[in-house]
Every structure is written in structure tokens, then in C-alpha cells.
Image 1: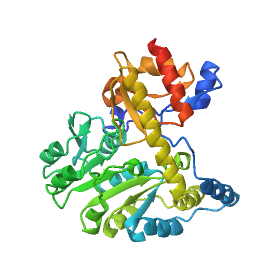
Image 2: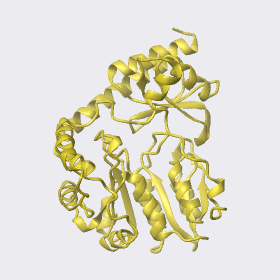
Image 3: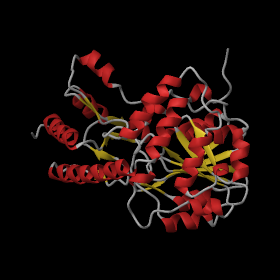
Image 4: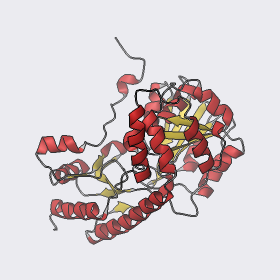
Length: 362
């Protein structure tokens, strides 16, 4: 039996290796994982308490409309609950965009070296992907504007972008939005939103308040430390949310995840601490990489793209044998690079020590 056109050309997504698998393969017990951009501090203690309490109720179906989480998230963001849709991670919200708005033959615009899910969504729903070139390591919004035609339906913009860590600015975003027709949907993928600390970062919520066809996706997986819970959300004007809810699965956000997310929203101190640990770790890694004479891309997220004069797969494999899991990124167009998550001070030091040993300049 053959799948529908386009599916056979998709390579299954390859996530970072889990710690348990590396332990089994290599017989190493002392392993750190810096491959998947997770919060090294883990979840808020409030979220942990909520998880334990909610676990006693898992014989029950979750609230399919996530009423209480939507109420609290709406208050946190300054929007109406009708402007929110919840997903099994923000990835599912991206998938729902495809299910709702992309038909065979439509055109979807995204940048090269952007999040792989945009490609998956385009292919699964039979769209023609228009992949615009990067400007250095940053998405070129002017090139995206030039690529718009009467067949364009969706534009995906990751801000900050993974795996480069770069962001597009407020000015660049305003210029693009001035060119976008009313029948084109712009998706701002802001999974790393809470890590950005720059005044020129575009605040995209006003586009929704102005009635523009915009969807913002964010997640509890990164700074909130709930990657294993798989819960994210989308923001848009109510008619877009109502339409997307027509194709959303009824119980797509599980009971424990909803409880954890509600508790995580209450712990602003944990978010601030996570931001501080990330900023300090980033500065430490920049200095260490500079001392080793390595090129890297300055990041607005919780990870750094590092370049080498040999294959990133080789560097990644050698580090893994020292108990440090990082992510090779050849699939994103960087065959001689790795992406390393910014960890705790101890994890960052372990990565630097391991990398020096691998490169032979310990």
C-alpha cells in the first residue's frame, strides 16, 4: 500500500539520543545531555507538586477544552481565552495549521536552516515549499516578502531560530508584515521567546489585537522545563482559533500536563532563575570557545551553534563517548557543526573539558 504523495520523501525525525540508550550502548553511567535545548534546572517545584497531585487522577479524561489553563494563561498574556489553542507541544499547533489552512498545491514559505517541522507540515499536506536563503545565519524576511505570490498560504518564521539561535528584529518584521496580503497566514514560532533579552525583538501580539492573520506558537517545553509533558499553545484571533479547534483532537493535552503548566505559570522566580543560569552559561561558553579559537553563532536561545574543521557527527560521537551528548546538525545544512544546549555550570564545564580533549588541546 502506497502513502499519499510526498510522504515517501520525508525522512523520519531523528531526535537526540536519550541518556539511557547511550548508557546501554557505551556502558557509561555518568552522562549529561546537552542535545535537545531542555531547561537544565528542570521544572518548577510548584509544577512537580502539581504533577504528583494530578497523577492520582489519571483514570479520568482531561478537560478537552483546558478551561482553567486557558483562563490562567490568558490572564498571564493579556489576551482572551478565545484567542488560545492548546497543543501536545507547540509542534501540534504547527500541525494544526497545516490541517486547517494548507491544501495540495498551496505554497508555504520558510527559511533554509529552519525548524524541520515546517518542511514536514508542507509535505504532509501537499504544499510546495518555497525555501528562502539565510542572510548569514539569520532568516531573510525581505527574501520571504519577495517570495509571496497569489498561491502563498502560510509563512513560517522561527524567532529565535533553531539551530542558529539568531532572531529577526522588530524593523525587519514590520517590513515583512507590510507586504503580507490578507489571505496569507503568518506563523511566528516563538518557542524560545522567554530567553530573549533584546529591545529590538518584535512583540507580535499587537498583530493579533489588530486583527491580522497571525498565529504565535509558544511552549512549556523550554524555559518552563516541561518538555516531557508535551504541552504548548497558539495565539491568534478568535475566528482562527475556532476554525483550528474543528480539527483538533478532543483530548490532545493530557491531564497531568495541564496541571503542571498551570503551576509553572505561577512560579515567576523559577523563570527568572532559568534566564539567569542561561545568560551566565552562555557567557562562560562564549569565553571558552573563544579561547579554543572556535567559531560559533551568538544565540538568543538556550543553545549555541559551534563550527569545526571536521564533521559535526565526528565531534558529537567523540563527545558522546566521554559522556556528553550534543546534537550534530548536518540535516540543517551545517555538516561541520554541532548544537550544544546551555546547561548548569557543572555541565558547561564538563562540555568544555570534553571538547578540549576531543580536539586535542586539553
